[in-house]
Length: 483
Image (cartoon, rainbow, N blue to C red; front, top):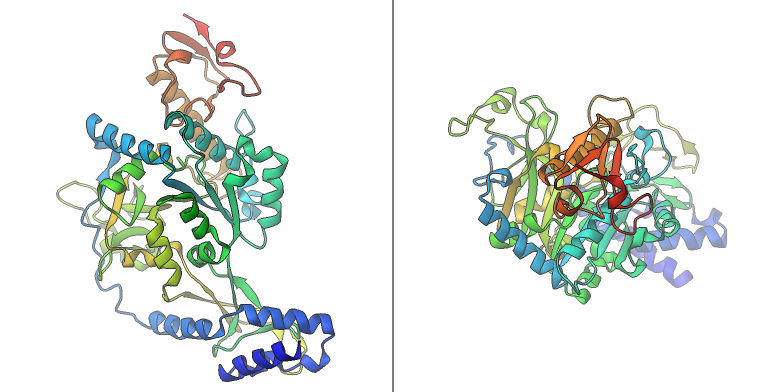
């Protein structure tokens, strides 16, 4: 232990952070061992370099002097039937050959939803009572089926956080991984960074504990590498990854249409977007980056004049590509992003800590900063960025606000999903009687396909759930009546 302590002391003294060891003489053996281990795991040189870079970036007030839309945004709803079929076929072929993985950001807690569980465990009130995790798992199962016989499993990489990791793992075990094999679900934790004071020095939570905070969803890239998830992708032969956040009830994981489109465009990174609901919608916008690639400009960073500007060629907003955290990557791009030294966003906070004497302090004003990175901060480094607009009502059902809220709530997401169920049944030739909910199980249909046998020429009486074969809760035959 003394040799490790001496090495840590030399490292932190050399970085001007000797104060982290100021109280080691007061620590028990267990406390000292814990502190040394914490300090060994921190790349203090990188943390301080990142802090300096972030301060410089925050002071650059000219960086948003020009905001231009991306040069090309495909509109998936306007694709010809042939082009759409070609993209889907390409995506399904890659899935069938084991080249595609799915990456989920699942570190958020459901506090605003009124639950102590991770967001992915949340039941939005569907008749089936399925959680967000279950909906995604079943879509992956169905997608594997339609990609062709003998298709390998689609590996699922789930990023948790220190607050949600144990509960998330337990939830999957409790539900038998929703029919997936445990070996095909890779859990890894979002990283953390030391909290700093306003001068850039590491804060101590106690004499034996460094004050730390999650490093933002942009920490996913380093976490993928440090956890071994990137190695797992390469070992499996995965070349392309679709990524989304857990709080979108309508997400289509490993979407073959999106995968196929991005591959056709030879993209190393890409994003799905939705048209903004209006100029004042508080959503980030995908824009062109000055150095190439793309960037997300937050709503608060866009002037009112720019937000209201109309593109005369389309009649839509000029800055119209609303970000929905739905991305495509090559594994090579993920590998590169893990090594980038890019600025973090500085958030000034009231951070409990100890003072020079080792006494605990609860600050009344902001005394420190937390560094966090956003998942889109690496987009400007893309050499070939692809962007596609999708229909909001079909692919974006955010679950962020408490039940009863008029926007982005379990109620609004549930309504969107049940409306999709009605749409799928009617497009498959079915007739619906009654005003109740019509839920189509993801095990029966991924995106409305394959419903003709269950629906064509038949009457479905709402409320009902159209289930997959073998699914608990009914069979297709019991859900419908011949006309």
